[in-house]
Length: 325
Image 1 (cartoon, rainbow, N blue to C red):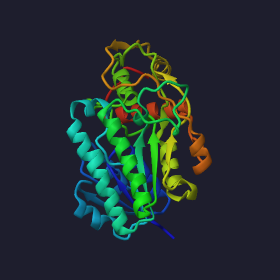
Image 2 (cartoon, helix red, strand yellow):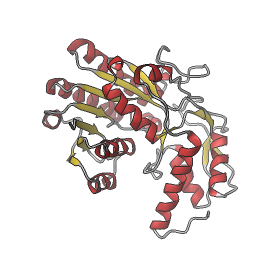
Image 3 (cartoon, rainbow, N blue to C red):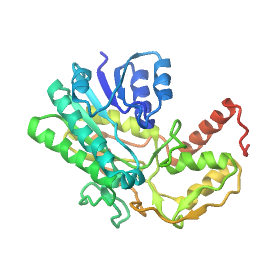
Image 4 (cartoon, rainbow, N blue to C red):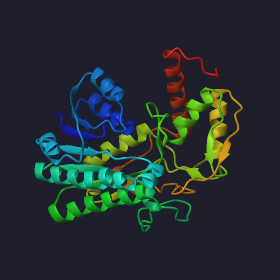
């Protein structure tokens, strides 16, 4: 029997992949996005798939709209936010409005609609720049950016609604998600899509700092898989759980791997480190294994190859002539 899922932020990169997975699994899917950072093209793609899909263009800050949308839903996967650490440093009030006020309204609407569970997209930025080989959920949060603080506040609200109202919530701390359909053009674009586009054009990728910082880059299929596990795992309710690959890639090594895949020899263009950026981020995924029975489906190297192939194909379809084979 199909279940009804609401996906907030479904015009975004992660949201569109999770909505696609749900549709392919035969679920009923309602999506909402205000298109502030999401793309209409992602919604058009979802509409091209067979399945039970309804689309609402609107904001999670509109409680009345959420009340209507959530009525009769089984699960809410809450991804809508104003992403990016640098953007939050430049626009802290706007980040708070979308990430904190919007999340509170999502939880209120979910509580009032008696949904079974809310899965909240938290962020590894909650850890800040704490030392240690990997970040685990037992560490005290120490965000160093407004975005990290706002996403952490959403976690606290999710847990408070579980204890105060019995609304089941699970907060998943995502670590540097990447994959096809990720936006390379934003001022605040993530490293991998931005690097790929620049290198396809024969340009050197900008690396903030000296390139010795590291990230737990996590392929999108792993995140979609973990989010759906979190909807059903009985032991996960009320918990905060890392969702990542559990690996570590240095930024200089990322550039080297892209050069190999793209058949280029483009060295990094080093630029000053940005405020709010952390040096190292790697997840301990033991809790996800224990509570969700989660294992990454796609390793970093395979995910990077798939992502490069997707971007190269987009260039070919657009009639462009990248500087690489």
